[in-house]
Image 1: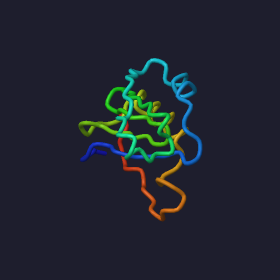
Image 2 (image 1 turned 90 degrees about the vertical axis):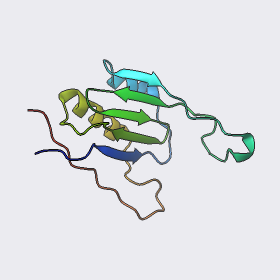
Image 3 (image 1 turned 30 degrees about the vertical axis):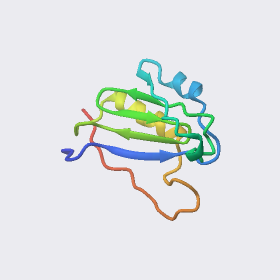
Length: 119
C-alpha cells in the first residue's frame, strides 16, 4: 500500500500526567531531545499543569513524537512506510497515551490514520 500523506495522530491522557522515566525506559536506543513548553505570562497561565511544562521529542527512523504530560503527537515529515523502530515508538506512545479525545466531555473521536509497514 502506498502512503499518500505523512502520518499525524494526537493521543491523550486525562487525569494523571505521564511519568517520563517509565516511558524512557521503554524507549532506550531512540533519540530523545528535551523540548519544554513555553512559559506564558502569569496572568495568562491558566493551565492546571503549569508546574510541569516538560516536553520531549523522540525520533525513530521516519516517525517522531512530541511527548508532553497529557498529550502526545506522532508525526512524519514525509510520507513513508513504518520501520520496526517506528512501530516500536508508536506502540509505546499508544500504550501510555490511551485516550483518543482531548477530554471526557467532548464528543469528538479521532481515528488513527492508515499507514504501511516496510517488509
